[in-house]
Image: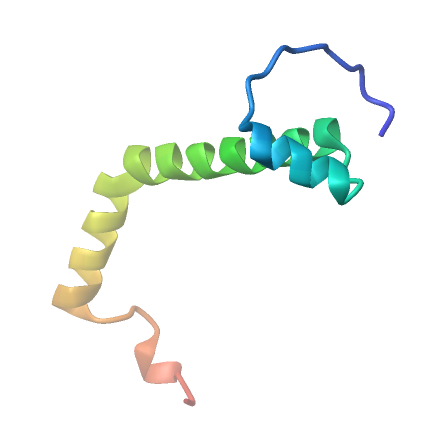
Amino acid sequence: MNTPRKSANLSLDAALVAEARALDINLSRAAEAGIGRAIAQERARRWRAENAPALESANAWVEAHGLPLDRYRQF
């Protein structure tokens, strides 16, 4: 990774830090990976919330009318 780095102060569970160090886990990289997953999860949650009306509308239409190309399905 050649992206710019930013120092941050974190408070972490002491037992987790000790175990991570005992296992030679890079705390900065592990924290960065966890934050990246949290960001992805939150973005996905927000996308679902923002698009819920459209998804509900599309699902209701399919419930009422069926899949548009259903007659061409071979499975």
